[in-house]
Image (cartoon, rainbow over all chains, first blue to last red; front, side, top):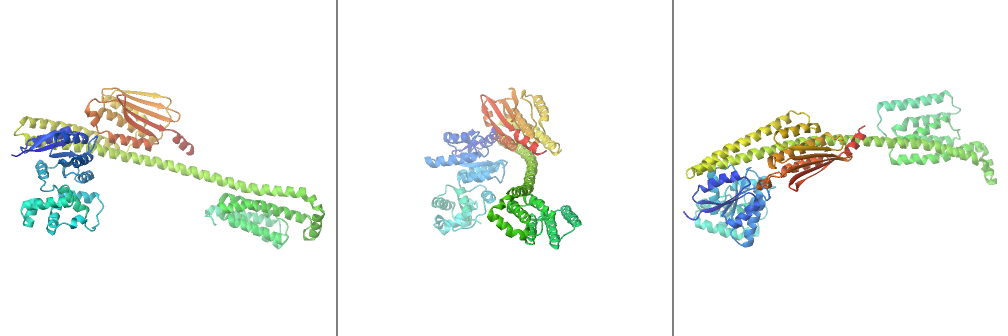
Length: 222
Length: 404
């Protein structure tokens, strides 16, 4: 097994964190590198422990998960370090705070009562960056909390994409993984990966979740 | 222009006018014009409340006919007094001022006419002109002044009485509106209190159920995955699950109890229920030192409820998040202007105190205080958690006075 994925837990309930730690530590490819009880502690934990993935609760005292997410992402932009990928934990499936956290830079959200298999898969998927977890739910979230978006002219950057890239964009925006896109478009996974990174660079997007958000905000997906 | 009157008012006004007309008719008329004058004045009398403006116009027209025909003043002219009263009492600005202007003009005309008739009417007009030329007319100065002043006083008094009536009525309506809005406010306060209660229970329910279940799920999943490699961890997870579920069930029982007591639609708690609340919490192990300074003043139901709930929430917070071993000071200070309440409790040492989610409870208490017309502050002061509530009794007193 290669280097384990470093996971940090940020939640104000110690017993909840303890349960998650048991789950994560049981996996040979995952390693729990620290716990924090609020957003401010979580921010410091990210600086000191340098996790790959942060499981972030939303409602916490002192500093909530949305602000902590935004700070962690902004700090990495400022320093140029690789930002940890943040997965937001929510109690409700239609949580406005989750939508705000994703806009703030979180890579996805997972319900607190999700199956452990789903949570573990989500950690691995987000770490690999090969697909977006629960893309349909993320779009549903935005549709639920945002005013209906009118289709407007696509942004200039989008018009610079090649037809092939646009095809892949449409599939990625629906949450398809690289493998799924490769199968649909009769390409190799490596080619898809190259296309995706080039698109993200052209559109100045940080990751695939931002691609979904971008597609939604510019009314590029039905 | 035309006011809406009740059937009863119309009948009364018509009856007064008819009686006046019949009464005057019994005295007989010395000319046809005299009859028309009386009829005109009777009509004005009838119209005075229905339309003071038309009544005033009618009265003036009648006077004009009287002057033109050189008729003698009639007892019926007295109807001008209630008409003037009505213009001030029942009309809007413009007509009211027309009524006021009518007072001096009417007085001047009355004086002139009385003088004119005293001088012998048209026949004496030539003599009057001569008297004006020779200055002999000043012999009439004294009587004329008396007539003029009497007329002004009579007309003016009628008008002023009407104005007083209007002012009194406005004040009465204002009081009624104030009373109504007070009642309305109290009702809103009650509704908001009920809604807040519901929101609080829903929030508590979420805190208890959602948080506990999240822990139970996380521990169960973790225990299952850790079991192979770390059986002790699985044991610990089971213990945690059982403990979490027990605490949650106990909390749910409390919440259901509150829901049930709310459903019974019993009266909202008042200050008198405070003693029972304090006793209950003493029984739960809290040491409470209650002091009352000054003499208690009556408070409205909304304010009493606010005090009760704030005391309840604060004391429960001490049990949940504060140092339950330290004595809680519960002090009421009654002032002539209002009541001040201070609840000072011990702080729990350690990080747990800082992490306690007490923000929502404080917001709810602040809302209650503001709705009841008071102010609310809460915070740490010298190793104590201090809640300060201040409620005024003044606006309640004002409401009681207007309620009489």
